[in-house]
Image 1 (cartoon, one colour):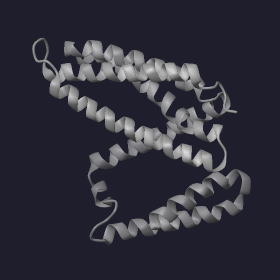
Image 2: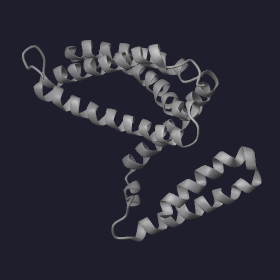
Image 3: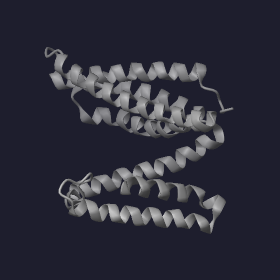
Length: 216
């Protein structure tokens, strides 16, 4: 309950600062207080929801900090652009880059050269934020009220389902990859990358045909 109240009031307060001004500081303060109490509770209870003691491990702490920072920064830049020009302006080229990079990775993976994969990995790293945030805010731009909330929850489920099926496909490809011409891990990785490229290509065609340039 402390985590739920803390995050909700903090986010609502931050969002309402431009419209409410100083009164929005009240929910922000309440959120920070609730989150502080949550951290204190988690550090002392026998079965914590979040194990904050793990942050004493430098690898864990720095990895989480990096993930938080990059996701924070990506949402700001791509979200603002998508608000002005519509999600399609980023989602379509992002899926194009993802398709091309994954196809390249899949074709070059059997060579076993990590250096050969670096260009494709760098391109894919650029493509992901172009798709992730703009597609996520699409429901909010296109729908109003309760419908946007339901669509946003469906967007979350789509991300989770894609991740689960992607992991399952990778495990399947590694387990069934041929061992004749290349090692099984390389062959499995290539099969998984090419399959992912096909999925991104299908999504790219769907976005090209169906996603409007700007939300109504």
